[in-house]
Length: 317
Image (cartoon, rainbow, N blue to C red; front, top):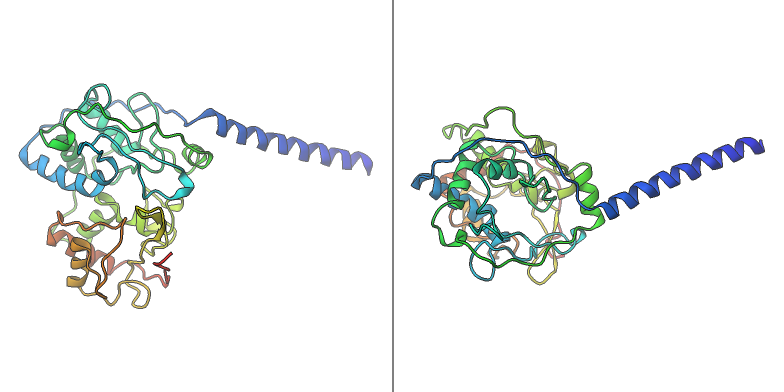
């Protein structure tokens, strides 16, 4: 009996040492690096692409990357959940030293798809990845980044470097590492199919599900519908005063979601921040005035098809 007890004790001690070693490795090794796919790409910069890229950037990029110099020079991301630590976005202006002026179009495409930078370093969970964004829309973002738009002109300004905490390092090595680079073209949906178009906008182009599902840590970037609490809200984010704001349930549940909202009420909320009850929506939800009515209406139509979740979110935390 004593021999078996010693053996069990030895095995448990060994397991504890292995776990401690893994935890120490994650803590002290920093973020992982990856081999970036090589893509030969030259994006034609056209007025149409620049305009489309500017619209997507207004939704996806500017709130995080706009610096105090009114250029995309980087800033503290104040709405990031506190569990990820203090996060600063990077300079993505055309400056060749501090920004992305020396990046090729292919390197930008790979980064937007996977989060892998041209040097192999990885942008963790707080930088969205866009494996579902259509090729043409990514080309439009790149065209805008190459354009003469004032926000992307060269700037030497940059915020302090982000020091990733243990959670960010662990997620980057496990469930929230880089998604695979698409092995086939990603096409735009048929805009005549309002449901398909709305789904693309909500989960592919504007990433609405990412904030409005239960938690960033449990979102499924390749199959968003498998995200825990898909569009059911409750994801803790911060307002500009550092107070926790829970994201809203925007499933069609009539009691805890937006099931009783009309299309016009949804449009007023998304574009102008006016909720049906007369209140103004609070940061980090912004008024997206750049969105055409047709896109907002398509998103509304798609959300009506999402499985309703009975999830009462305390919006005053």
